[in-house]
Length: 467
Image 1 (cartoon, one colour):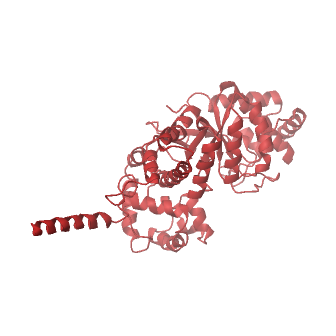
Image 2: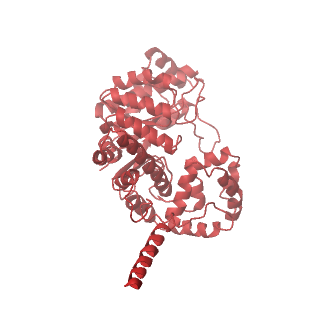
Image 3: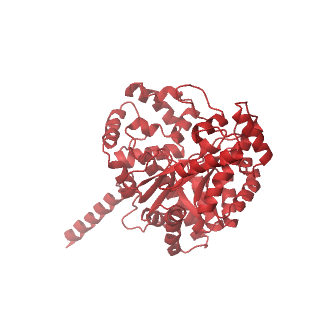
């Protein structure tokens, strides 16, 4: 009898030791760590699981429908948010040049990767490697890189792997992308028309084959077919462009607002002066250039108002009047929100989804969405990207903005791997934000699932015809 009790106690001890010493990186399909077998999931873990079970629409990305996943490790390393941090700690831009041999590129990058190991972008990068490629080492080194290169290359050669990753591991139903002129056949990736070339004077694009940069009036002539010489001709050319680019199958379009004055009402006299100068091929002043942009913008916004369509309005860096942004893209000086509000009120039949890229712009966009019936707000995670930023956005907006006007996830990612990585950080930060609100007594736990579904799926579905 004593021996039997001793054997039973030994078995219990063995089970307990085994359960509590399973490596923490073995997180399973959802990436949620399991605690001791006798413990209940924490509040944050329970909310994470609710998020994992919620269908998601990613309203902003740079995914290519013909190549959803990064084809190799260097494409994953080339994600803009990661490259910006690597360059900030001294990595030369040429380090990821595809002309270099793979070993040479790894040699050039690894020391800089170690310097950013503490950042949110690095957390996402290593989470991608761990969850998707079974890479559990704390750093990429020259000794472990070869096997990692092979693993990433193998998924990059599978044309179905990226779509399966998004749908099965993130529950992402649709991804809006500005990176391609087409949508994929499965309707997973929805093309977004970029209005910046037409409406942003500071949009910079090299003219093919010339190495030069177009002036705004020359760009208008190329996009519209002719340089307009009068207001009536300008309106006709814009109508034709709208018919070609915005009607029919197009479901999402976006505009980066680099200066709030570009949404101001155009002045007919200054418009006529600018059009006369452009038709005569004379150099335009900054004021004349901006007047042409205002004219075009109001004509396009009239179309949105007449159709009730939604425009993604990206709050970009405010221009200094000479074409030089005062801030990096995605940042917004809050002093101009009054100008923006007046224009949004004027086009009250149009719908505007404000993609806000930093704390100030998210705060001000949320305030506009809380006051104006035709305005919604999305958290854009291209630039100001951290767990603290995401949690702060969710915690604030959940109490400021009606959930039918709030969108949670806009990854800004260029590959399925980075959509996954950013979604893991978003999931944890969002769970932390709602846990804080629940613990403070503002919500009950069972109220969270409907809110999550609304901001991750139903609100973007209502803004854009993505079915």
